[in-house]
Length: 453
Image (cartoon, rainbow, N blue to C red):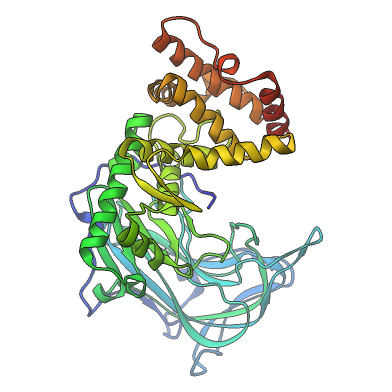
């Protein structure tokens, strides 16, 4: 569930604006079938094609009409892009296209097969000032006859977005982004998302917008779960002293465009993989009041990705997978909340991380984020959570340029501990070095070995 984007946004939330959607007769906002006399690739922005690749009009559409054909003999990320304006700000829209593919696949890169993202329709923003820098349709591989693909998105504050019809993808996760083969596109459309297409519930800090097929519980249960997420949000704010995206609500949106190995990815919206067992999260909350590890984790990431204080992640942050879970630990402790991590925990979930620590120690290393997480929680047990509230506030208020340059993650770890030690000294009333009071020399050696690999 690694967060690979770092959007930053400052404008304030307009009341209820991000919950706008159309009725079932969705209004068409944009359409291009590439078949009119005025149709031209000049209406789109085209990537420059390398040798062995091309983007062109052909009369090979579903009815032998004109369409776009993108082909490449080598792995590539090629696209045509349309800048869409005039959208209503903070409104759910659906973009769709008809797609056909032939022999779309990845290739071996440095001895590893990289599937890439195949033929894919996607948002092409990749702008640090955008809450939602991307989203995508399902990825098509191999040879497929004409079919419609889609994705939903939330328009930005300016009512603009960029839509791309692509072969391959400019970014990538574990399976890479680039692909090769041939893809045809036709009938690209944008409509306001029909009311029946998304199940939408709204709370103080969150907007849930998911495919209705995932909802097997009643509205009251969903609303109670969202209130739990609101409490987590409030706890994260209390711990860090700041909020993401200028305080705008965080949407949680199901998307077909994500690899099977990813449960969700942080941003605004948090993109929730439509192909995972989404409904089980709501069902676990109904049966056990389980707040849900995955979404709490992603909201934890959002407090780095969209934080308008400091540099978000900050140069001192050596591993936000650790810190996303650490923020969660504070929320669970504060509200004595229930959450499952192999077993159910009520409130403090230090036991889960302590087991990871013991397993690592038995192997003679601390090469685990969960194990290091446990050592951070030991500090909170000794000095209280206020030590971290003070440390985070000062860190987020300190420009990266004043923190110095770090050679490795262990130096970042020591930088963080310097701020924690300063806070502990203020609380204790005497000088404290937490690397001495809360770690053994052997533990520090093992952490150094893990963080300097």
